[in-house]
Amino acid sequence: MDDPNIKDFESALAELETIVETLEEGQLPLEQSLERFERGIALSRFCHTRLEDAERRIELLTERGQTRPAPAEIAGTGTPNPPGKGTADDGRTDGPTDDDTPF
Image 1 (tube, rainbow, N blue to C red):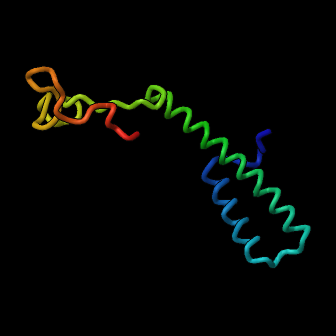
Image 2: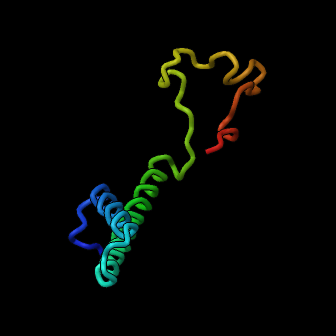
Image 3: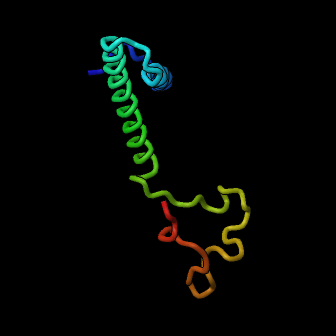
C-alpha cells in the first residue's frame, strides 16, 4: 500500500503542503486538480500512518503512556526529596504524585 515514490515523512508533508497551496489557487484544469488531489490523499494517508507509528513507539517507550518523574538524583536536583515534594516523616506525600500528573 505504501507508494514507493514517497521517501519520508518530511518530504511527504512538504509535497502535501505544495499541493494544497496549488489547489487553493484554483488555476489548474479539472483533470490536473483531480490528479493532485489524489496524490494529496496518498501523501496524507502516508503521513497519518507514520504519525500513528510514532505515537505507538512513544507509548511503548513510556510504558504504555504512563510516565513517571525521574528520581531526584537523576533529575539533577541533588536531594532525594526537595522541600514541598516527596514523602513526609509520617509517610504521607506532601507534593504531587503520579496521580496528579495531567498526562
